[in-house]
Length: 153
Ligand code: HEC
Image (cartoon, rainbow, N blue to C red; front, side, top):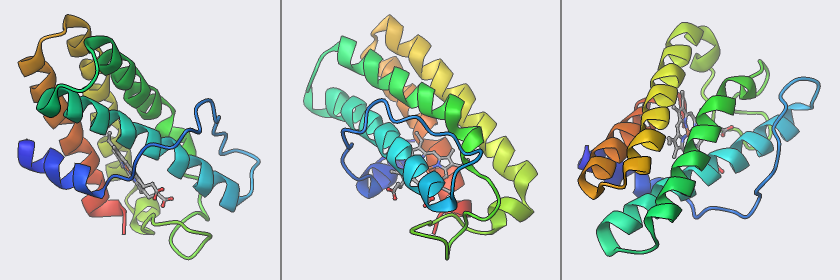
C-alpha cells in the first residue's frame, strides 16, 4: 500500500487553486471537459498529498485531513460524469487512453472501487486515528494507481 501511494504521490502535481470549478461533461466542448476533469483530479491529488504530509511530516491538523478527504470524496462522486466519448488522447491535452471507451465496464468498476475507498476515507478521517488514516489512504491510492496504470498515458 505504501509503495502504491508513494508511486502515485510522485506523479501528482501540486494542487491548483481552482476550488469551486464545476465540471459538467454534457453539452460542453471536449477541450473544456478535459481541462475541467484534469483540474478536478489535481485537487484530489492535492488532497492525497496533504494527507500524506500530515502522516509523514506532521503538517497540518486532523481537520485539514478531514477537509482533504472530503475533497477526494467529492472528486470520486463527480468522476463518472467526466468521460464523454471524443475526449481520448489526441484531443486537446487528454491523457485518457481510448481503452476507457472499449472497456467501459472495467473503467466503471475501477471508478466504483475509487468511490468506495474515498467514502471510507471520509469515515476514517472523522475518527482521527493516524494509523487507520494511513491504511485507508493506501487503499485509496491503490484505486488511483489501478486506473492510471490501465487508462492514463
Ligand atoms: C477510474 C479511473 C481513475 C481513477 C480511479 C483515478 N484516476 Fe486520475 N486520471 C484518470 C485518467 C483517465 C486521467 C487522464 C485524464 C485526462 O488527461 O483527461 C487521470 C488524470 C489524473 C491526474 C492528472 C491531471 C492533469 O492535470 O494532468 C491526476 C493528478 C490524477 N488523475 C489524480 C488521481 C488521484 C489522486 C486519484 C485517486 C484519489 C485518481 N486520479 C483516480 C483516471 C483515474
